[in-house]
Image (tube, rainbow, N blue to C red; front, top):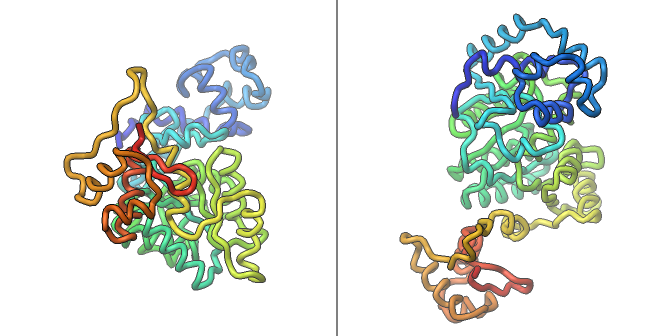
Amino acid sequence: MPVLSQDECAPWLALTRVKGLGGVGLKKLISRFGDARAVFSLAPSDLADVEGLHREVVDEIVGFSSWAEVDAEIGRAKAAGVAIVPFGASGYPERLRMIADPPACLYIKGGGLATGDDRAVAIVGSRSSSDYGRRVARDLARGLASLGFTVVSGMARGIDGAAHESALQAGGRTIAVLGSGVERAYPSEHELLYRRIAASGAVISELPIGTRPMAFNFPARNRLISGLSLGVIVVEATEKSGSLITAASAVEQGREVFAVPGPVGSSRSRGSHRLIRQGAKLVETVEDVIEEIAPQLLPRAGGAGPIAPALAPNASEAARKIFALLNDGSLHVDQVIEKTGLPPARVLETLLELELQGLLHQAPGQIYSTAR
C-alpha cells in the first residue's frame, strides 16, 4: 500500500476534525470540489452552495486552525506503525468508498489492504456465544478462507474471535474493524489474535490514535464491517445485539444479509431468527453463502461481445472432466456425479470453484451449464 506524505494526509485528517461534518457531507464536498486540500482554500460562498452543508460546518471549515493537532496525529500514527489512508487515496477500499457515509480516513495496522480483499464476507455475532455458535462461525470462516475470501469481523469476544481465528488457521486473510484506536488490541485478551491479524491481514479503525473503546463508537464501527463486505453473516444474536445493527447497515448499503438458525427458545437465536423472518438468507453451510454472492463475482461483459469461457492451464483433472461434460449441455448435479464417477464431495467442491471463476452457471434446481 502506498504511504502518503504528511502534506497529502493532513487535509483529510483536518476534515475529520470539522465539527458537524460526517461522511455524507464529506462525499458531497469531494464530489463537488474533488480534493480535501481544495476544500480548505474555498470561499464561504462556494461552500454555502453545497446542498445540505450547514452554516456552522462552513464556518468550521473556513476558520479551521488546528493544523498543529493534525500534524501531531500524523506523528502519533507513524510512531505506532499505523498507516493513514485517506478517502481520496488509491488504497482506500472501493466498496467502502461507495457507502453513504464513508470515513474521511482509515487507520490501518498491519500489511494493509490487498486487491483480494474486495472478495470479503463479514461474520459477526454474540460476544457470549455458545459452543454451537462458535463451531458454526469456525466452519463458515474456514470454508470462506479456503475459497479465497477475506473474513471481516470486529475482533470481539465470542463469534468474532472464532471467525478471525479460523480464517487464520485456514491460511486465509482476515480484517478486524475496531471501535477504538487501532494501535492496541481490544479486548486485551485478544492481544495475540490482534498481532496475528496485523501480521497477515489488517486491523482497521476510523478513530484517532488513542481513542478508547467507548460504547457509542461501536454502532458507527459496524457500518464499516458491512461496508467492506459483499455480505454479512449473523451467527447468534440476541434481540438487542450489535450484530443486528451491522445487518441493518448491510441492508442500507445493498449488501447481502445471512443468518444462521439456532435452537428454538434460546435468547441467542432470537435476533438471527428475526432476520430470517425479515428475509435474510438462512445459512447452514458456506455453500449457502456462495450461492447468493457468486453472481456479484462474475466478470462484467465488455463491449467486444461474449468471450467463450476457458479453463486455466493448471486446472485439476476433476475440473477438466466436469467442464468438458457441461460443454455438451446442462446437467443436474446428480447427473454430473453419475457421469464423471467422481466422489460427490469432490464434484460439489469443483462445481463451486468453477462457478466462482465465472466458468459455470447454476440455474434453480442445481442445474449447471457453462457460462456462455
